[in-house]
Image 1: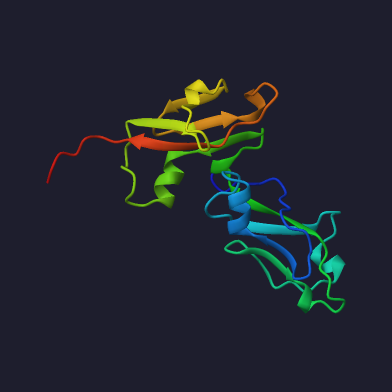
Image 2: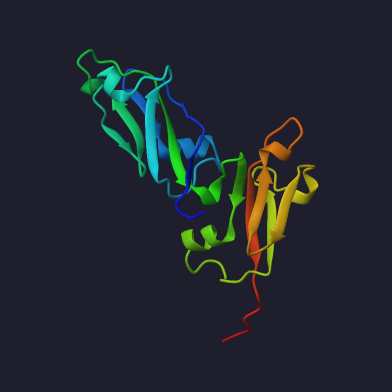
Amino acid sequence: MTGLQCWTEWFDRDDPSGKGDFEELYALRNEYPGKICNSPLQIEVQTVSGLTVDETGNVIAVADTPIGFICKSSDQADCMCHDYRVRFMRPVDFCSQEGTFFLFLTHCILKENPGEICESPLHIYARTADTNIPATSTGQSIFIPHALDGFTCRNRDQKGSRCRDYKVRFGCPYRGYN
């Protein structure tokens, strides 16, 4: 499945104000924890009504994956930005076509955090990010096949709710003292 991608949901955290419309990646990550991967592949931008940037005529200051999206009112002829929303393309490791949301896959975490996690973890421990409740005590349907596979929570398996935001840690083999 390498090479496949999927998109996040649309995010609109800011409304056009005197300064413009700012859908910056760091702010979106703070407001929507766990929804945007560490290295988005692409960004897509449109107004909340579905118009493209070209259709609006707005001059855009930034529209990229490291920063996000910025439309400054001062750059516009009429001093007004439209209300925009953004979404990000992420590697298939973070979701699948059937609506599965892979919260954590071990090989991706290893890749994004080189040298911080052992190469062959023995255990994976998942807890809610906000309240630190063990995943096995949340009442949600989760799947932890093995530490090397990662931790999976699928929205479609939950009854009347979506997967909670989880964090993981790994149990590594004992290396002894050097």
